[in-house]
Image 1 (spheres, one colour):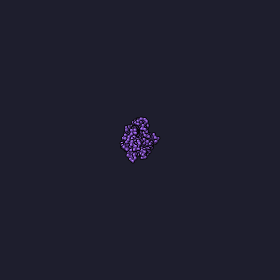
Image 2: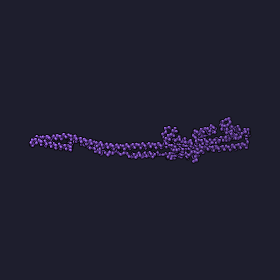
Image 3: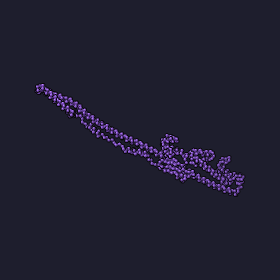
Image 4: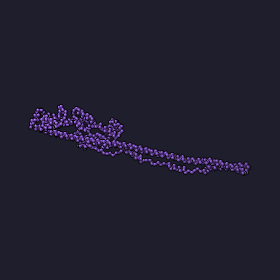
Length: 458
C-alpha cells in the first residue's frame, strides 16, 4: 500500500512519525542531512514502500491524507484476471487539486494580527498642554522690573512712615532741649537743631531705600524663577506621560511584529506541508497509473498467451488426427518401399516420433545441434522410407509435443518461482531462477519466459 505522505505511512503502520523518528529512518536508508524537506520525505517514503513490497502481493493502494484523496489499484490475479473486468476499470482515483487552506493555528495568528492592527494607539494628547501654554505666556508677557515699584511697595511705605515719625519726634525733642537751654525762648538755633535731627532720620531712610530696592528686586527675580520652576515641574509630568505613551506605542509595534512573524512562519509551514502532500499525491497518482499500465500489459500478455496455447492445442490435435488417418491409409493400402524400409529398420511410429524430438531438441545421440523442421522431415523420409506427408506429420507432432512439454515445464516452475518471489526481492528471485537453470530443470528460454511472466525487469 502506497501512502501519500511519510507521516500517514508511518501512522498506518503504528510507527513513530515524529521528526526525530523520521530523521533516524532517513539515516538508516542513506538519506543524509535530513531536515524534513519534500524531496527527502518522498525519498524516505519510496524507500520504505520498496522495503515493504518484499512481503506484499502484486498491486498497490495509495492513500492520501485526511482529505480522502485516494488512488486505488486492484491487483491482477494469478489467472490474469482482476475479477472485476478489465484492469483499466480498476484504476480508480478521487484525486483532485486541493486549494491551499491555512491551519487553525495560522488563522488564529491572522485574527490576532488584525485585532492588533485595528487597535493602534491614538495620537498623543497632553493633559498639561494648557497649563504649559499659560505659564509660558506669563513668562513671555511678564513686565520688566519697574524701579518705581520700590516706592509703591508696602515695605518702603512702612519704613518711610516709621522714619518720618522718628524724625519728627527727634526734631521735637531737639528743639525742646534747645529751648530749655535758652530759658524757654525759641531761637533760630533750636529750629536749626530740630531740623538737623529730622534730616538725619530722612537720611537713614535713603540708606534703607537701597536695601529695600534689593529686596524688592530679588522678590521680582524669585517670582520669575518660580514660574520657570513651575514650568519645569509641569514639563516633567508631561514627559512622564509622553514616555508612558511611547511605551504603549512600542508595545503595540512589538506585538504587531511578533504576531506578523508568527503568522508568516505558521503560514509558510502550512504551505510547505501542503506542497509536500501535494507532491506526494502527484507521485502516488503517477505511481498508480504506472501500476495500472503494468497490470494491463500483464493481462494482455496473459490473454494472448492463453489464446496461443489454445490454438497450439487445436493444431496439435488436428495434426494428430491427420497423422492417424495417414498411417491408417498406409497400413490398409500397403507401401512396399515404406514397409520394407520400416521393416528392415524395425522401428515403430513412436520410434520415429522420438527420433524427431531428439533432433529438434538437440539431444540426438552424438550431436547436440538443434535441427530445423524441414531437415528433420527430409531425414525421416530418406532414412526410414517414409513419405513426405508422413515425415512432415511426425515432425510437426514432435514439435508440438516438445512445445507442450516445454509449456508444462514453464507452468510448473512459474508457479514455484511465483511462490518464492512473493517473499523475496527481484535479485533473490533471479538467483532462484538461475539455480533452476544450472540444475537443468529449465533452459535459458524457459527462464526468460518465467521472468517475463512475473513482470520483473532485467
